Length: 438
Image 1 (cartoon, rainbow, N blue to C red):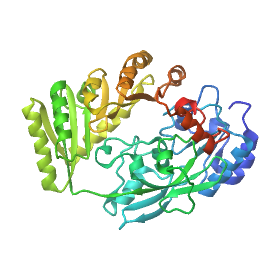
Image 2 (image 1 turned 90 degrees about the horizontal axis):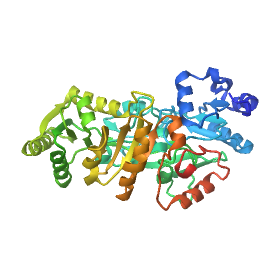
Image 3 (image 1 turned 45 degrees about the vertical axis):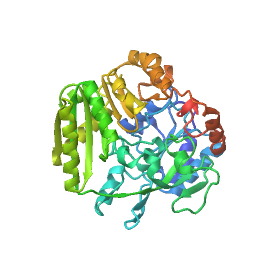
Image 4 (image 1 turned 180 degrees about the vertical axis):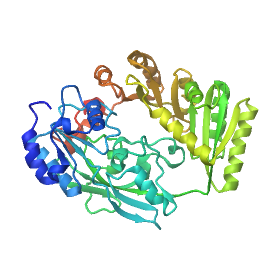
């Protein structure tokens, strides 16, 4: 590790809080996958001197209090599955992981709510909720390793937003540790409120720049009786018409996405663009709605198929894996937001991508730096002209150092800086990861 970092202090002060076994102060002792994730998250030449793993909220608060006193820059994370998202953090001294703060606090089955610590794995929580025939209606990237706190911090959910909304729509309460080590709460299970801000919305997608999330409360939903997925493939114009028909109908898919031609072919679903729609309800409703979408496709000359049971689960798992996998290190993953009616036009211009039919949010994959530069000068400008956006999630650090990851052109940057100043006046939390270098 670099010589100007507080290695000796890490071994003494921080290890005295979390225990020597929970403070890793030699880079060669860091697990290889974790090394890679951290290197992807920080500016070159800025390796941290210590990685600490608090096991309680109180330990987390004490660690941040020491960092605040010493002006150490902190990179918070959970399991690190999304550390490579966002801008490159600068001058990081200490990485603080919440993955060992992972207990269930309360599952109010009758109220359809759950409160958990931030380090709990998403997959572990879903398995626990399934015992009561309930689930958290999010479908994040890397569901096996993603932590609840990391999902909130990055605002990460996928196709289920069609029916259930975004992360912030389902978040009822939040507890976090401020930059100075003080604990604050808002929303459900409130002990102390911070007046003036809707903290659930503010912290969702803040990338660890305002505080370190330690506990959250979510609304839940009952598991449905039956499920089926319809896939339509074919010419772009016909797929666009099918999407328009579905948007304007009384049908209620829980997931509905448009797929690019390369994504369709790589999944073995056929040729051309694709429309994938999933229905979950009682058996009769699922069967009726699936058949109606299939009929719409037939009238438009599209190929169609219905997937159920294991075939359906396998399809969505493969789709998730394909859209998020970086087959090569040079591959760049982007998040896009466009008018839903413009989604087909955008997907016709890229090789691999997925856009939700109602929100217009989606993911694109670009294969190299040249495509990113073309994106910046072309696709990004076109989306912005239509009040949309295109941001880079994952890319080699060399690319992020040359291209504005966020590409933000709105008028809210001054306000964002003021909020950052209110919550983290010393700028020690995730410096550089957020919009405008915040």
